Amino acid sequence: MKKTNILLTTMMLGLSVSGLTQFASAQTVDGENSADVIINGTIGKLDNTDPDATIPEGSDEWINVTVDTATAFHTTTASAHKNIESADYSIVNNSGRGVAVTLNKMEGTPTYVDTLTINAKGNGLATTPAATKLVNGNALVDLTSTSTWMTLANKDGRLNIDTDAASAYANAATFYYTGTTVANLPADANEKATAENYTLTLKFTSIQKDGTTIGVTP
Image 1 (cartoon, rainbow, N blue to C red):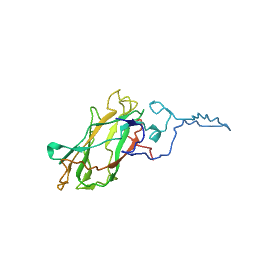
Image 2: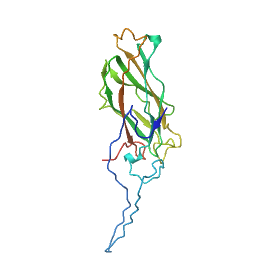
Image 3: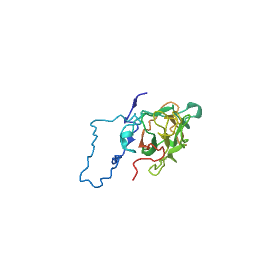
Image 4: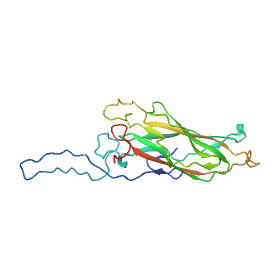
């Protein structure tokens, strides 16, 4: 199964650009008429797998996720093609920060799919991802207001970078699809397959080093 850190065609990964805020130390200038300001610049991509990298907290520059993006589901002969199932697919956080995963958008046109649910599982996940319908009643589900679907720890298994022990939480999970088909399937469904293609957009948001603050602090 081919994997990528950003994007392939079947599943689009939505990333929003956030403003960068750098932390600084302050010095009081009292009774003097000047101060030296140290400027530490970096040109080029910082190592976002390093928890100590000087990347602003919550920045999208922390995003480093490997996900199976060519996924598929199928019906089963045993159920007379009424039940939908799939293989297990992988999602792994390679970053020095935890990541929040949200189901952002679903596109496509249901024809014979009545319900389609995305499920996830994994040992040691910080929270249990809720089984979430992508198609319901032969119609796409509006995902725009859904909350965080999955939380993955950083590459070392930490959410709170300072206090969590290594491997405290999982940085990887698997996901898969289940569902059902409509009552009026084609008469030749036992002999001929009909394609239904969709695009699911996942949004990744970096979790700050405290393990709870998601994204850039306003």
